Length: 434
Image (cartoon, one colour):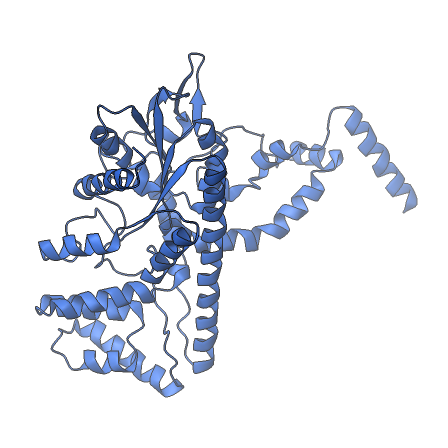
């Protein structure tokens, strides 16, 4: 046995002298995808590229694609060092301009509104980015010398939460095992000879936002609790998820705000909005129910779905009186109330469905999280533009649930981008930043 160990050590030394050194961190990352979260979310090594003339442009790997639904960033070019003052818009796909034609992003529209003033506006929105990824961009953002940052973030902290948790939970053991193996030249030699070693690549794969969203939403639904004990456990898990997302957002946004303060950069924080009548991804019972109540509720819900029951069906009232916190059922009740002309009832139920969506299975922020963003900005003495009452008023004027302001559940259409750019300009003027 000792002879065998000695022989392996000799082979290891010989292979190292022959050039089979352990993988560097960068090589190992590229070969095995240790930073798979960053790769999946198009976390580019650099988001902006600088040429010899001092011109910056969006990284080619993020701005390639035929239109905004295929791009991580909006294609653009600008002087790396601003000639006057600069505004940078930060966020995910809503800021990037997902689903909109060129020139209809928030940055583009704000630039138009500031025509004649010595300001340039840079679009640093990246489709799919959550608050941690925005935070990791900040060294590049500071190099662009902004005077003002407009920050719209929050949805993606919810959207991709299950995937981040799943990747971290399931990959850690494999990552540790591979890292141990790749410290050995002998293991590298065997992997290459057996054809198992993927060649290191400096390219970062950049799936489109559609592909990212499809993968994120293609997740197993939450288990439907059959007993009061199972329901209690599900409730606790979702409360933990909400607290995790809050801590995640708070740590990242607070870090950005502190750095901005140190650099004397102004920040406008925006509370994200979402379409009121878009269906929730999943639901849980937030209300405590007994085993019998759970069974009764499930039977009612199955019958209402099967019959496509109208609002006049008394089973809706029985269902909601038992538990009105299960988001898909409350949303379906809102739909039927709207069709029956009970519009105020419908709006109340839609809001409730949005608020009660499980944090770990949501594509939108609950209203309570928006309140919390306002509190975060107030604590940091940073102005906050809360879009929720403005979007609500616009919807009521149109007398349609979404107010003709969204392409889908969360993305802006051209009308809402124009409204948002005007609101941002007003905020900048109100605070004397222009």
